Image (cartoon, rainbow, N blue to C red):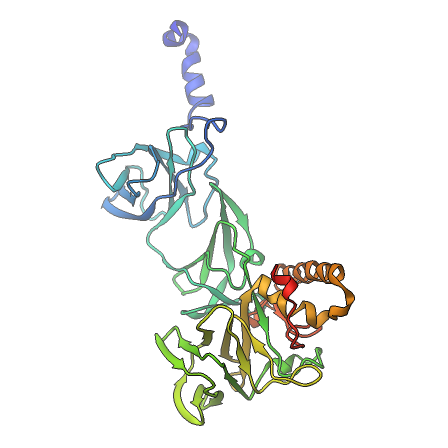
Length: 410
């Protein structure tokens, strides 16, 4: 140590300026505890002067964070937080405050920055990053309803259609790492995606927070399943439904809800470019928005009386949520069923295989059906229509028999 302090021949300067010129984090001790604290929230910035920005964030008092690391990246892209050269500050937690802050004194005029803040505990386990952009950018976090990569458009549940910029950047935060992705990783039905807009209101940056939950499947319901080659059979002139225990009809975007009573007949038609809703023959609502029919109880079903399925012929009933939307052309209706993936199997397996084949064959069919559904999910082959699987042999036959295999519920 004495020789290092003497800096003979400039050795100490060389070590400092060439080999250890950036900050570094203390290694973790996973043999004691490898669980990271929760990430910070409500991150924001305040301009203090021409070359100063104060980054502020909040942390829950019960969070086990001991200190924070502030990273800075130039431009709109998010770099690798494992790169220590991007660390611009380490802040000890002030336990008397919910809000913490750091001042960046090296801001260059007319430059764009991305700031990322992580929380670390006493064993130096690092949380996921929380991100803020300078200058401020508009962003939207909503459920993804449709993805059209041919026309560079995406539909969000409330915002509707948004254009995607040609040079869009996609990142996914996995644990505490930021991984570069592409549009194929943005899944229909995902609710963990944030979309950032440029000055033209196009999406030029997408951040996927963690792994996308795969617990539900979205099924495109055809008016007729006997001709899977005809994609126009996904379009309807009118749709009628009812439920023995009633259901709720929701327009989430306009915050409108209707209680539909037992066996009320609800009809949907396209009139003057809008969805018209009739109850027992009387018009009750008109909208351009997506409508949701949700049963009151989880295992209740809604019967679509305009559909005919199976032999002998019956009107199919559906668990989960039924969505009625305008078609892309605007003059027809589309029908989508969103349901828990395991309950999807209740009405796929008996449609694909007779019960007489035996228990072990039906078990194997259930595994195959789940695997096939996940294959369609990850391929996004129906993403431009807003669902994962088709209800005909184009994917696998769904709800084409009245039999429900109770063994699948065990």
